[in-house]
Each structure stands twice: as C-alpha cells, then as structure tokens.
Image (cartoon, rainbow, N blue to C red; front, side, top):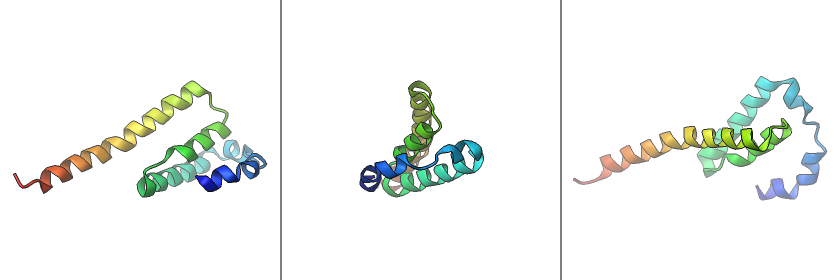
Length: 91
C-alpha cells in the first residue's frame, strides 16, 4: 500500500472507464486481488476502496458493501480459528 500511496498521481491518470465497460471481468479481477491480499496480509479494503471509488459509488453504499465484505470474509476465519483452538486444546 505504500507503493500505491506513492504512485497516486499515476492512478489518477489511468482510464478507469474500463471498469464500467467490463463490469464482470473487472469485478472478478478486483475480487481476486482483494481475496489474495486478505489471505496473505489480512487486508482487503484498499483495492476495494479504489475499485468502488472508480465506479463512483457514494459513501453510504460503499460503507455498507465494505461492512458486508468484512462480515462475509471474517466469519469463516473466526469459525476456523475457533475450531482450530478447540481441537488443539488438551482438555
């Protein structure tokens, strides 16, 4: 994310209209990137915020979608940690 922050000017000059012209493929690519980042460094929000901002989504719907993404992404993680902790306990 430091690199993204340092390259903000380049991101502003990109043609983001491709996201609206190809909504399914762009959503798939951004979703895969967010999933990869969530699995590797446990942070999926930055690419999602960039994507939703490029789509022109308002603050309220963006917040609702990001909260839903967090809930859907963290619930299985919490369940897995709970099962893992329970099976690892000596009791």
